[in-house]
Amino acid sequence: MPPYTETEVKLYVPYLEAVQARLETIGAELVSPRVFERNVRYDNAERSLTPAGIVLRLRQDMRARLTYKAEGEMQHGIVSRFEAEVEVSDFEAMETILGRLGYTPYMVYEKYRTTYELDGAEIVLDEMPYGNFVEIEGDEDTIEKVINRLGLQQAARYDGSYAVLFERVRRALGLTFTDLTFDNFKDVTVPESAFFNA
Image 1: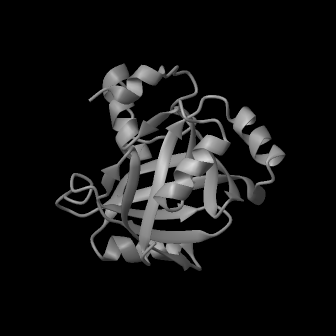
Image 2 (image 1 turned 90 degrees about the vertical axis):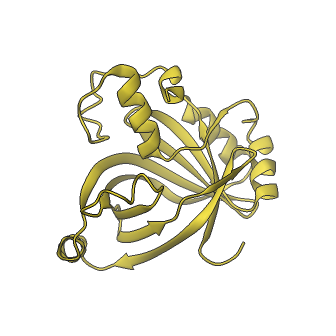
Image 3 (image 1 turned 120 degrees about the horizontal axis):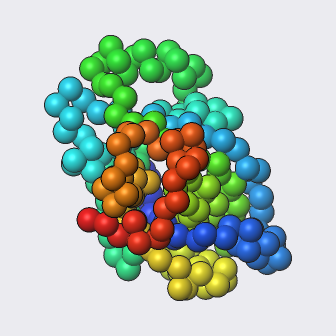
């Protein structure tokens, strides 16, 4: 893949335990055990980044990272797009810098993520407040091979980011909160059909 290119597929998989067991059975390498992530997405004063499919994100897990993603192109349910990411030493200082540059938080989203590697692909098991997903990143051929090895051929593929899916869920269920957090979803049941709401 060219530098600064992310190619991945997002699959809705309600039962991650079965995928994790399969990964371990076929010899996938555990790269990062389950970790909590807090992500803050930013937009400019005109609120033009998000509608254009541009992501400016500050993430905190075991480290802090600033990420820029351009709008993606979709083929066979696999998304490719420009992505550049840099580790920063101080989350709060980076928040301050972004604010001074005119960027403000657009939304906060949380997840628990477990990361594996298999056959040259990165496989992440994401526990989101509204459901569980598997993301596989690599080149297209490798992604398809890993999907087959994991027995996930029938899993629904989603072209939208977690933020886009959140907007669909908000509309489908009439939710008024704007952050994708576990506290906000503690009493909300999300059917898979909500992710298809346009």
